[in-house]
Image (cartoon, rainbow, N blue to C red):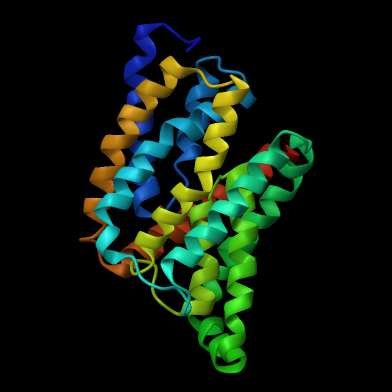
Length: 255
């Protein structure tokens, strides 16, 4: 951690806990961990890699809590969605090594804006799409999931929110009902990226262990809380988080 100053350890653990809880409830935990890592002097590329690696155990813990809530999405089974997500994550991790990050940073705010609009419009647009597309929603959902898997493997920020937005449009279920699949698929999309980051040697492991320990506890606590909160509260918090993330992406990319 600029890294090894133990005085910074409580800050890193606290950031990990908050990020893990956020990921369990709605997503967007990387927007806590990345600023924290940059603040202690971690280079941006290494901060992104270290954050992804550190938050993965917390996502896994949340997935364990939510495992009973896994269900087919839009008529597609969990195993099929998982396979498509992992394939996409592998492609995204490979692209990360060759695609200019600056170009993707310019596109990212618009993707986040689309995700926000999708969540806002899903209650009205979703039933309309389902009534008119019928079974044709299956290839649309698979294509969208593949693209989100690629995004998750490449960058991963707010990928859970974007998955929720896509699924809400096609499946019609509320955000709380989709929480288990969101956490599970988001964790799966990041797995190939973690392998690439580790092989590339850009992970700050001491920092990742502290951050990951906090995220593990936060992910478990957040998932427990998420199972008790009403769907309306989670939806409101998700929308607020979407707006905040979208604004932060625009500021980061253009200002």
